[in-house]
Image (cartoon, rainbow, N blue to C red; front, side, top):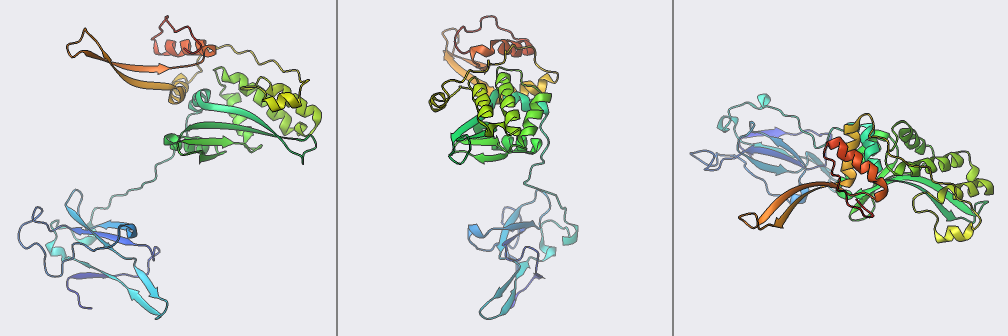
Length: 345
């Protein structure tokens, strides 16, 4: 085929088989005067939207450009054994709006990948105080000597719009898996017995400060028994069930029926002490999990427009965490002595 203008004969590239896109200067009347389309000038190429691939630019920064899309750089017709190399027809450089030779174009690096940074350890603890769960699951298993299978796990379930946060937690801790749990929720979960040691070590060095710390202490005792393989014996299993009695919501009806004579291990006493050393990070983590930022528009006879606007920052916790809530209020220097006296505050 005949063609006029400047052409680039392509070689076989590393991305051969993928689609390529090249951007050439726009020659619309809005952008320039005179002849709109010089002899041999290509300004666009028609192709399906789903064939779009890589993109290059022949324009200086912030200049008007038009997109040209072309097929991949190299292909072979299997039936005819013919090799086909494609050429991209480009406009004469002397006709470009921006008089910059090809080899002097300004190149700007761009990546869609965000730079991952480690999350502060106290942020992880604060977020876990708000959102994490320490779980000891027990299921009937006929293949086990005791008739039960015991699996410990640490998990965080949140809305999937915060999936990136869970992935950052996983990457920072170096353990666990992240997956979408449903159409609206995602979960970070650690259930590997070796990887759980990382979780136990983290909360030993950077301890939880809310009511959940008692759950962690019970969980840790169960985990130690499982690591020692005591859960494979009836005596060890009974110890785990006794610890599980006061872990989270306690025993299920099935477990209470299966272990009627178990004496529960008392739940470790919890008393709020203070927000830890790097308070800013703990606060940020906890707020990310449990706090809300609201704009409230209410009717008001005192306002000319009949409404008033209030900006609200709030945290709702179970009454058992009342001292923790007071500690957060003290941190912000906004303690309100009129805390609501109900199950939640």
